[in-house]
Amino acid sequence: MSPGVAVKAVKGKTDFDPNNFLATIGEGRRILSFRRNQGIFAQGDEADAVFFIQAGKVRLSVVAKTGKEATIGILNSGDFFGEGAIAGQPRRMGSATAVADCAVLKIDKRAINEALHREHTFSDLFVAYLLARNIRYEADLVDQLFNSSEKRLARVLLLLARFGKEGTPESVVPKISQSTLAEMVGTTRSRVNFFMNRFRKMGFIEYNGELKIHNSLLNIVLHD
Image 1 (cartoon, one colour):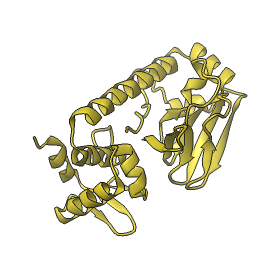
Image 2 (cartoon, rainbow, N blue to C red):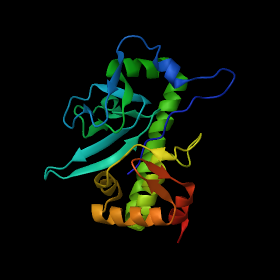
Image 3 (cartoon, rainbow, N blue to C red):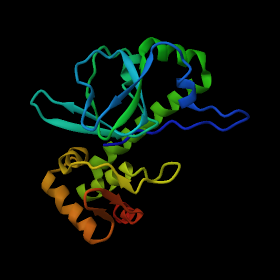
């Protein structure tokens, strides 16, 4: 599944930076720190706030009644999550966990609603973010339906490295387990291990304590 789509500053006669704006919305917000693998909220918790990642990465996951867990996204700095709180969602439909050490801004539901009404530029950015996230989920569905597990894994790795986004791609991504990759791709851990070894032999990735993604991995995604 997909990472989120980071909100960017808008260039115009005056620069609008969502990070700076969120720091000025007054009461109802606080910065929280989470260590790697620490839970931010759990499935079933009260949906009372929206979160903004200032630094780090966050994993979103859901657990079925059978106990099976699935990863639905890895989010990066500049991403929002937990936005269901302002759409009438009473309880969290999934869990959020820090993939790496994180600094997260927690914004109470009332505060984010007031911010969206007060600053139209921020409101426009937030809506654009939600639309981009929805488009990414649709792309994920198409990916699951029509592409091989090898292509899906390559796409997930490229998304984790933020290839195709504004700015410089992150060739080194935080350590992520093959089990988590398998959940995101929709295949088995053994298949992920097979393809990861193949990608490494072909020079598309490197991993020895850390995972490095080369843009040559695009060849797998683009190959018919």
